[in-house]
Image (cartoon, rainbow, N blue to C red; front, side, top):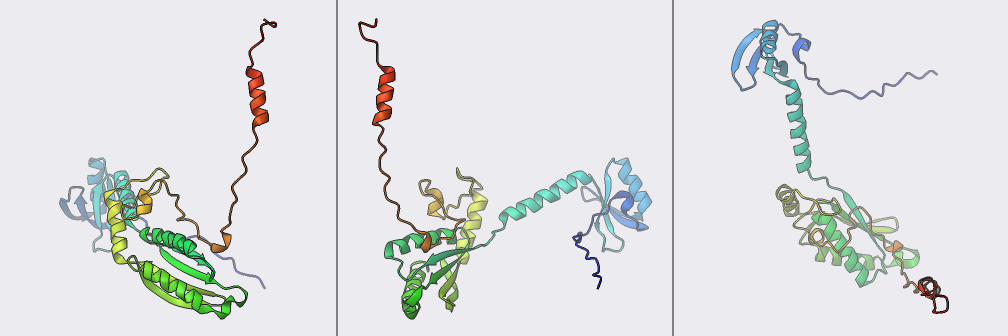
Length: 258
């Protein structure tokens, strides 16, 4: 059976009508400085705009008659784009960061993952703690519950509980979200500072990790306990041969050779 063609064209938003695209018979005209010129025919409004070397822009098409403004349309579009950009900068995008644990995760690793979670929260993101069970570990879920309760107690100053610990297959998960006070501090910090650190990230004054330039961030990575590896110290390379060659190359000629 023949399938009808699908239309994948995106729906366009409302377009601003200017100058001769305004097809209504009469409009209410306002100057750029706010002065009201009153209701007049569209042709007369166009003539007044041409006399001022400006454009006639329809700013309220739903009014009766539609409201048009005489202004520089290029400047108007630039200012609209600038206002939209400023509003976008003030928005806080919330992401869900995941920190993965195991029932056998030791205290030191828990402290490390707790610090990462605090960094995620002070950046305005939600955090999901996931404890994965292997083999017979599933018979002792109380161990995972103790870990999550300990984490929630240590992080209660920054986060609210959004989802209680729940079992999903062979995993137990907990979701927390930053408190409103944290979000407010983050937004005020962006508005007051508006700067970036050496890595190009925005600085959050309420986040100690952002002001500590010696610590690397992991904001864009999930922390997986299974991926932790112990790296042995690399053996020092034997550079004696290279040193001998260098010394041989720099050796001065003997008296006989001279």
